[in-house]
Length: 521
View 1: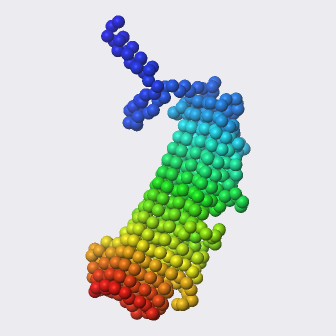
View 2: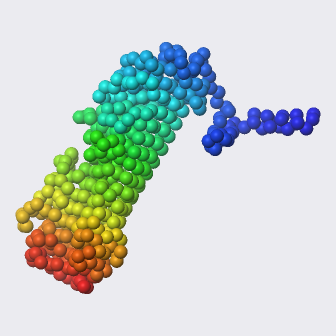
């Protein structure tokens, strides 16, 4: 055996003994995972990007439970139906494209694949490509893959290559619907200009994980709790990346409960001028929702919206780079759906560069624990309590509010407002160990800086620290550290508070109590 034959034989032997190998794609400088043990087949299909292969593909889906489709562009003009326990897997480069003679649900709903009662079906590694002709969308249920009354359907590692403009009526990559639908998994998909409706009409427990959504025509991710008697339960929205959504990044709405929205990145919402007025980055207005460890940047309206009296948890989120946005809004405009829901918990969030940091509003009873949050350089108000409820209890503790930049107008760290006459309602604000800092670099702004403005009765202020550093605005007005700002609140208690280098204006307070405070001018 000569030397060359030995080398070639050795290489071939090594390759044949290796279950999978990695090849370097020099053009894109990426490592491609090639699984040599998996063989892909043409199934006598052409895959030439010209031939209508709808009927042949449907026959294949009807007759086979495992389909490993060879790379190619397969044209369809009608919706394909996938049955239960079918694996439909594409080789890298497998494309399913809508043709120029679309009909039925493909034309009217953009429906490439229907999974109805298709339990345990798998759709993986297929690229869905837009028709060269326009679709004729209906108002509802437009979706590339429509999952209806099915359990354990997986859509994984697919590419939805569409190029729709921002608009109100468009198309989803995947839509999950029906009271019998449960435990769908939508994972590692790349989606351009479409969204995902991960639950609708009573479907439960969808997992939406590690997807990338670019330029969604309207909402990027949505749940619509539209069934009057069957709630959407237990969905998980984890570690998705959303960029430049036309309307909202994530909307979990209606009769939903127990949704967990965690670890997502949302950068850019309200990009469609027509939909910008609803450009909330993350709206979770179901009940018992957990919104945790998300990063939100460049939102249009609100960073995070929750129904404050629906037992929500808002923990460890970071909201930044949105000068016209409210960071977190606790919305109490809705009547509680049931008694004894947990009090809203808002903790360990970081909010910087927004117009308002946190806003509490609405006319229904407002109870919330707001603690250990950080607010940096909010433009207008860091914490704004403007509830119209006749009864509320708001607990603030261990929050840190800091300003290092001059203001462009009047600016408030904590603002407590009421529309009611003093003594008429039971609105209680309790503060404990909160800190407000005006750095020397925050001086000489155009407006007046305020630390704590209290206009409600019966507030209890414990261990508040206000460091104003003798700052003055451009007109020489000092930081107003504590004030009623023209109101006449009754029965305010100040315990063990410290103010350094700022004004403490106790005019207007009626029957207030002072206990071991240190107000240093």
